[in-house]
Image (cartoon, rainbow, N blue to C red):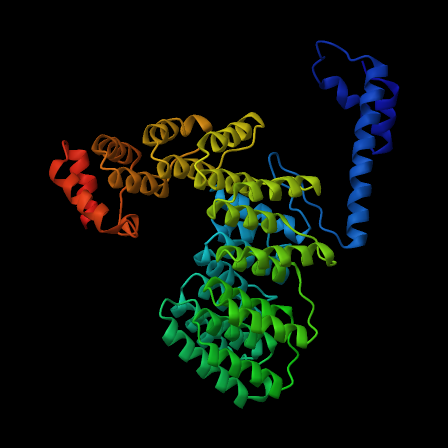
Length: 499
């Protein structure tokens, strides 16, 4: 049966209605109202699709068909970088393929954010991979900023040869080094282990910078060098650099003084630190929270508590607000001096000011109670953390293990170590080192043997670093364990230890 609307449609396009009679009859005929509804729905869909296509073409947009399982590329630079890093870590694809997949949105800003993310996670090799990909893109132009960023990352990771190769490559591309590039090169050298040689190189680059008009040293250059010489305890050189800054009329900032004072404070050079603080006040440079924190830490570390408390009172009266590191430092230093009452008062002050204790704060309290021999209190804090469903980190586990070991409770330490995995903490090489040191010092052979078996089962192979700082007694004890090892697994582990 041929409906009238079908005949009309065929006539409209010049078709022959009689041709339909030759077709075999269908088993069931669809009701007329359903055909009308279906036809209208299809027409609407086609109309919307065509309309959207026309709008897209008029606006210069490219329409992409959405495939099943296809991830939508975000447009925000931070989100793009987060997506690429996550997919790379999950092993979804290589970094180069991920960059190619998102090449429509990845530009210079995204690459800089990627450099930062990869630098923080110790993936400096992948940062070079991103750089190679950049060089293949049409939008890339050789830029000093890119090279200085990469040189800085390579330097921080101890890859000085790669840093200098990048410096050489930059000049081959026609880029002329500027102050920021030289600052990155100086900082890269200062990350090497041979500090004396590094300082000599840095000083040489400083003189080169002075000779070039577009590479004149700025306050960042001097901040880097001042901190480095202060860390090397070269007071005369620090004073000479301060005079140089004054001669060239370079405006100092709070980072200049903080870097030098922090270095002096960590080396116990409190007189020199105070001289720099006086110079800071003379230059009318206002201290920030970092200034207060480093002074509190320096005085507390060397148990000059009267001055530490004076600085804390000055902080409370200033426009700056104390931070958790302020309180953590005071709790730690009071604990080491076995002034637990004062440490508890600091904790009370922290909570009364409306601060929420962090994981580090709890760890500081555990260690402080341990120094004072209050093992029960330390254990209570650890239990409170578990009850409050605070994730126990490896550092928290180490804090309580240290308390047990320092107070001669090796049985308790062994029980805690056995229950570590049930708390969601996987022991590391540093955990085994902590316990090995305590067990060998106490001459507890049964615990040493048990620990070695656990190391072997976990695939932890001790190296030179494992035995650094253990002392002559522990070295003799490890040799004794080697002679008395009862099975092949112990021998294998200890043989690697000796190598």
